[in-house]
Amino acid sequence: MGDLPISSIIDGIASFRSWVISVWWLWSLPILFLVARSLWLAYVREWYRQHLVWSMFELKIPREILRSPRAMEQVLASIFALINAPGNIKETWWDGEVTKWSSLELVSFGGEIRFFMRATKDNWPMVQAALYSHYPDLELVEIRESEDYIHRMPPTADEVLKIPRRLFGSESILDPNKSDVYPIRTYVDFEESEEDFRLDPFATLLEVLGKCSSQEELWLQILIRPIVGDWWKKEGEAEIEKIKERNTQRFVSTEFGESTMTRLYPGFGDAELIKAIDKKIAKPAFETVLRYLYITTPEAYNSNFARRGVSIALNQHASKAFNEFNYNKGAATRVDYHFGKIPPLFPKRRYLARQRKIYRHYRERYIYPHTFAENILELKGFHFGIWGWKSSRMVLNTEELATIYHLPTKPVMSAQLIHKVEARKMGPPMGLAIYGEEGESDLPGMQK
Image 1: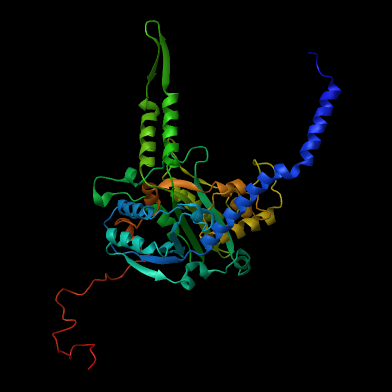
Image 2 (image 1 turned 45 degrees about the vertical axis):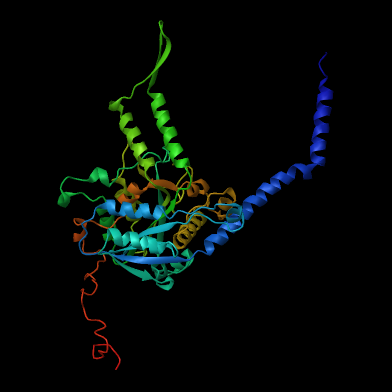
């Protein structure tokens, strides 16, 4: 069979192209269906999120806490146990149910440090029970919506800038060059044998917050959403297998054929690394967003403090062999040069767009969605950090979260700027005559 002439091939391609164009409605239907499906899912999920009812409480710290961060780890494990997920087609595609999240917040108003927690109203009684069971002297004060500290500032970034105020915001992420299954240093690595000499890794962050002047405010929120399914554990197991593979030596024996030998070299830290990863994926884990805002007057604005204050406090958890927190340039309000040389495009407009976005996200306690349509709908004009925002969601387990957020231990409580409970509240003593004997009517408070 001879070769076909080139003209015949060209004619065949032209005919096929004409046919594809003529039936555009046929091949476009699957594409339109996928787009409509994604948009509908984004709509119903947003409707579900908007109708969640929240409870927010301030944690009034007792003057002395003898519990280690392990107590907060148990509280977080209780929060993880409240995990929810759509279980059928109706809950997924009609109700738009999403996994509920909580917020751990730490703020400094001119150096006065205060602790807050926020969860959905139906979950809060269990969160409250977990807190009281591990911190019996803790006092929880309910914060009404109108009393939320975010209302100290106007509702939009534009109004904040007109007061006038300077605004800086960013988010912290784990090393983008490593998988999240690699752990950070936790409170276990800081513990000493003697209780009174135990190092609290929380102290550095509290010192940073306490350094705010009377004109400065630093708001920090840690949004946590329980991980649904076993994909997280599988990712960790795959990483362990990858580490083992690079330490596998293959050799050929003339007598027995090909054999395989696995050898781990503790000197290179691989054995410790496998142990650390295995420990991290063994504990409950959360999708986490760590976001902070620095707001102050133009005169008091300290660029170095805004950009590096929180980063320095988190850097003590860094381990070059394992993982560390990084400053997320894609989410920060600062507009940098591209590759250190190329001037940024529309710097003023991009700077304002970034300020608007992170300020709105902080006030909404916004945790990033999963679907492609939700990410696209979230894009705003002149904010080019698309992938930076998407990558701000990291995975931390209960031990890691308890390290960066817990009630300060005894050595740290010497700080005078932590908002504390001045007196311990106790119930009435046993046997106190509250109601009296039958027929007795002269007790205090009883109507005659």
